[in-house]
Amino acid sequence: MPVDPSRVGTTVGPWEVTWTERDSLLYALAVGAGQQDPLAELVFTTENSDGVEQQVVPSFAVVLGFGVGIPDVGEYDPTRAVHAEQEMYLPGPLPAAGGAQATVTVVDIWDKGRDAIVWTETTLVEVGTERLLARCRTGAFLGGAGGFGGERGSTSGWELPERAADLEVTVPTRPEQALLYRLTGDRNPLHSDPVFAARGGFPRPILHGLCTYGYTARLLINEFAGGDADLLASMAGRFTRPVLPGDALTVRAWREGDAILFRTLNEAGDPVLDRGVFILRPAPQDA
Image (cartoon, rainbow, N blue to C red; front, side, top):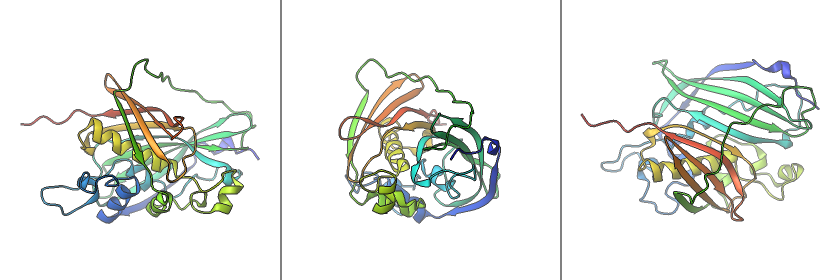
């Protein structure tokens, strides 16, 4: 059942999304903040700690714009739809609470032969100021939805550095991590319903790819930005394998000029989030 390439340019929205400090705190917990040391990341996990101003784990921007899922691009099997790639661009820090107008546009549909990849771009514009908060580009892999004779698409250049990683850190996920993460908005039963997951060929419900993405963003911020989320300018990565809740994640990263290249690995040492690029903006200079 191929998708319809004429749906490129389809736009949904704008619609308004709002979030509270509590939503930002819940997201931080859902991507592992405070899991190893409850006092280590109070900037993400509390709003009233003495001398600590709440910050938002920046990958929350992707969640805020994810409300409508994939726009109508024709027929495909939802049990074979998985997150393939994710990019986000942030002009500045996200407020801990606020409102935004969200718009999602289908920007490309790639024909991979048997399968298809649908690219969408979501913008978040702050209510009241018209300030762009985030631009997020999402690639969704649709199994069995190709074969319509379209473009195969391109691959950006990314090479694994031929040296030891500048950072290697391993963290656990919790067995109930997907049940916690789904409370941030993604209620896809692939991550909670064993019957639905089995229809997609998985032995049990899998962890959200965006949960792995959020874990990775948080760890890289802590290690390369001193825990200051305001310094993150952009992050991109490709999802390559599913993660089961309870599995440990290992992030390896290499600083290459202005960019930090990264891979996130599963317990077997296989990449689950690959071809990663993480870019920080310069820290503001003291007056």
